[in-house]
Image: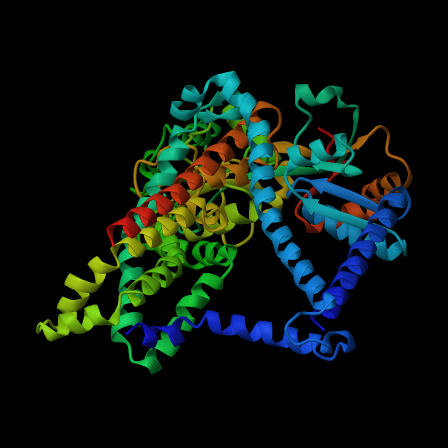
Length: 326
Length: 279
């Protein structure tokens, strides 16, 4: 049963292909023909050079994260020292030009935006994944999957523009108000996190061994019973990971949100009222912020950094937990 | 073969990097001579941009780069040397006075209070406008309109229009914090044009048929009432330079102040020539 899986994942095969031309390059080298068992010096150096090149790539990624954290931390730390971390996190007023540095409304708004997007987007995404993995015929799958993948490739500013120009006036007409607000943001974010959650959920469903499906059918279960009672529970850990990644995307999304949120610096008293989030406050305020205001924006960035680190940590813990279970 | 390809890539990167570096040198070396950077108010943008194009046609080889980022950002960038001219739709704040900026007033602008064309309200008193933007009046029926919730549209804090509107209308009071905050004149106009209960404020020059400008204290907002000083919400538009304008900056400012540009470009953009400001 695992053999039938291998061609589908397909990863090891192209790797082998890459190695082959390397030998072919080495072969015409006149010095290397003397012995068969040893590789030539040229090949050895090439291999060593490539190994170090890849090491360098990895180092750049690690150094990038480290430097950004260091920079944001150094720039933002003074605001914690000035107003106090607790006051910064729980203050109800964000009027930096009047020396009020409380980001509680921003935190609450970010969470509201994320939770609503998940409630709308996650079932849609998991449904899409179940369809792609279990229901669709191969032909239909070839049609739907690229469409879902394309959704992930659309730049977020395009989502925002779509929301601002098309969706917002419709919502203003249907529900009154200006059309800015949580509801509009939820709709946009739900579509934006769909491809992330759908792709990872599909992977999780596909990694459920074929034998489990066969066993379920052999017991007389219907397709629906197999999906609901067997496959989704079996892929549970992978699906939770997918949802957390979707949460990360929803809470970090900036460009699309800033265009349809309306940017009022309060906790909105309705889902059709404008609001500001942790990410959009940086976009809105950075062009003119100076002094403590600018420092406070870096403080907001530190909080965002910590939130996304928490998401990554949650995924690692849950994945390890899942491995121990199985 | 793979290495050769990598080598080619490295060479290509080197070429790109060095040409970027060269371009950078050329720009910084000749900034005072061939290119002029003008940043600031989005309100001033239509004047600065059209004038820049005409100025470049009249002076081949000179380049004027114009960007609209808000008045505060414009003043910030001219004072720290990032741009040569900072455009602004507000005067300097007290804390900006010591920056050594020289003010050249280039046009007159009025701020119009705009509503959706479907709104039957056609005029408000200044006090009513103030209470609406403070969030004290929340429904159009309280000012003689239909029973419809008022949707407040505000500008961001970098906006000179917001600064001026706040000074004219609110005085020391604060804006309603639940109002939508939008980062540009065009966005305010399009949102007001698409929402029945919306109210916002923009430069008179940007009012078009998609929105309706309200009369304030019974005086309609138009060029005539602004010129004779009866319309209450008006202000100067400023060009700020670090020290007295000189070289290309002076040439560009003189060009904008010329009677020809004042009567064509400034008027076409919906503003009033600076010469009209005799009140």
